[in-house]
Amino acid sequence: MTEARYDVAILGAGPAGYAAAMRAHDLGKRALLVERARVGGTGIHAGALSSKTMWHLSNDFATVRRVDRGYRAGDVELSYRAVLDAVRGAVDERRATLTYQLSRLAAPSARGGTVELVAGAARFVSPHAVEVTAADGAQRLLEADHFLVATGSRPRTPPGLEIDGERVITSDHIEALPDFPESMVVVGAGVIGCEYATIFANFGRSRISILDRQPRILPFEDEDVADVIARNFERLGVRIHREAKLESLRARDGGVEYVISSPGGATETLHVERALVSVGRAPNTEGLGLRDIGVELDRSGGVVVEHTRSTVPHIHAAGDVTMDIALANVAELEARHAVEAMFGLGPQPIRYEALSAIMFLSPEVASVGLNETQAKKAGVHYRAGKVCNALVNRNIAMRQTGGFAKLLASPEGRILGLRVVGPEASSAAQGIAFLIDKGGTISDIDHCVHPHPAITEGVQECARLLLGRSIHKCEVFGEELLRVGDG
Image (tube, rainbow, N blue to C red; front, side, top):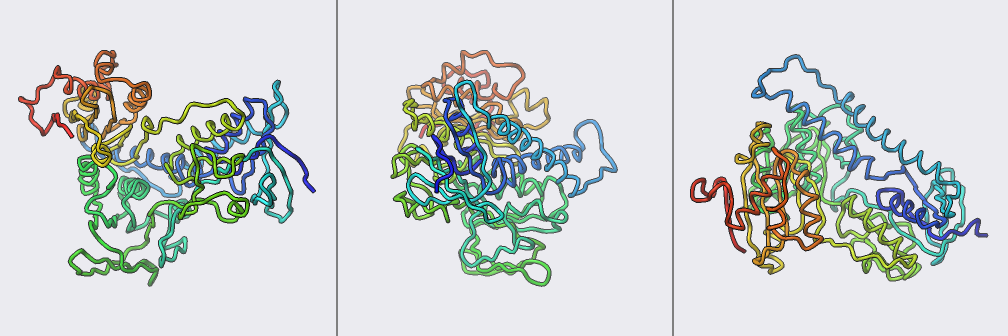
């Protein structure tokens, strides 16, 4: 017998699910929020917040070790346990905020909105009902008019690799390590793998190798972006196995043995203390009973959607579970859009071409819209202006002049995309994302008064290069520092 009925049931309390619950509350709806593990999901646990906290701590430590800052630090103690305590402190702080708000929203608002959090694993037993099983085995049958599937994703495990959580690990196991590994190979040179390689290299206690099947790391990014990151990895002592095929990897003799082969067929056997497998993420759709009620899933198990609506009209999906763009900010946008669509608000389509993201590497990388690789693949004609950070006052003041800003625009001047590589790169992203969303032009960037000194002045100079009125001249500095190109 059904215990209760809701206006909307949301499966998963990560970034997407939590945002959806708050938007439903805004609209005066009775919302059910089901979470089988921890409120916040990978948005804060073993994911975005925890890894970024660790990245910031590693950067602080790396800065202390530098000798070109007018001082030399000595006797700096480093403890993996203490680092993790700081990470957990950040996670606990954010989780407390989320759970406190949920506790206050259980009572009806002035508009009648409520959010009820139920702990357990949900499974559809009919198109309008889910069975929720708690940790102690107790079950509840709950109904709703609408559903949002926001169960997120987990690290993907390649066939043939055994993850034991001790020697062969994924990002989920980082916080369970007893200490900094003496040596570690990172299998996969995408964003997550490169972020953790950066973190451990910054701390300087681990010999890090990266295994990449491609000719270069970050293959989805432009070559000049990947080159800066690769050079900094090498400066930090990170070894990159390029175009290497993993033949085998197994825990052995208290460590990990792995065998790689080169394109020419030569093989090499190497030994490390641990291996971090980071080859993408898989959607959490198993056990939900989605196919049983007619929801179509793709080959990876992700929910097939049009905008956010699944093949069953009253069931939507948002975030990693759709396996389109695995970013917390995208998950939140999609979830809010889904709730508005459910209740007839007619939300505007999400402008994915204006999305911004940050890669927490060495140095930081901010991305908005198209890069050159994507533009060429899509057959989009563009002009690109590139300014190296050695010409930007803020970077000079920080004594960190590696990297660059690169702006893409249509031949008519409409902004298409931006890449900034360097410290505080993300400070330049949101303004350009806003302009792309509004159809802005490079003239808009030029005419805007930018703070001084600021990272965004490099972006402004990119726009001026494309307009033919830059402060720094290509004929003087050449392509090492400035570049204007067409594609």
